[in-house]
Image (spheres, rainbow, N blue to C red):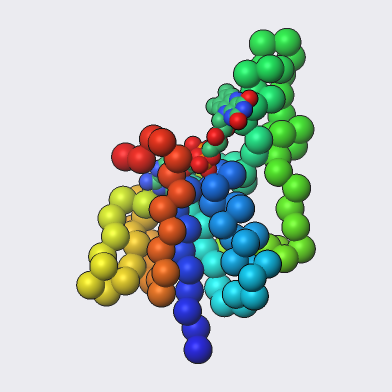
Length: 111
Ligand SMILES: Cc1cc2nc3c(=O)[nH]c(=O)nc-3n(C[C@H](O)[C@H](O)[C@H](O)COP(=O)(O)OP(=O)(O)OC[C@H]3O[C@@H](n4cnc5c(N)ncnc54)[C@H](O)[C@@H]3O)c2cc1C
C-alpha cells in the first residue's frame, strides 16, 4: 500500500522529520514542500558569518543522507491550502499532493 507523507517546510524540522521516518522504518513516499528554492540549510552560521563574508548554500547546507535520497523535494513553492476531507495539500503552483499523513514544519513563521 502507498501511504504518502507530505511535509510542509523544507528546513531543519522538515529534514529531520524525513530522516526520522526512514530511521524508524517508514519506506513509503515522502514529499517535502518548501517555499525557499534551496534544500535545508543550517541557519546559525548566517548570523555569525554573513557579515564577514559571502555565504554560499553549499557551505551551510545540511548533509544529504542516503536514507532520504529518494525524498521528493518540491521547492520554490508554498503550500497554500490543505483539504482534510480528501487528504491533499495544494501548492502555489496549483500542484495537488495527496497524503496519508501531513506534517507542518513551517517553523514560527507559519502563514
Ligand atoms: C540568522 C539565524 C541565526 C540563528 N542562530 C541560531 C543559533 O545560534 N542557535 C540556535 O539554536 N538556533 C539558531 N537559529 C534558529 C534555528 O535556525 C531555528 O531553530 C531552526 O531553523 C528552526 O527550524 P524549523 O525547520 O523548525 O523552522 P525554519 O527554519 O523557520 O523553517 C521553516 C521553513 O518553512 C518554510 N515555510 C513556511 N511556510 C511555508 C508554506 N506555507 N509552504 C512551504 N514552506 C513554508 C519556510 O520558508 C522555512 O524554510 C537561528 C536562526 C536564524 C534565522
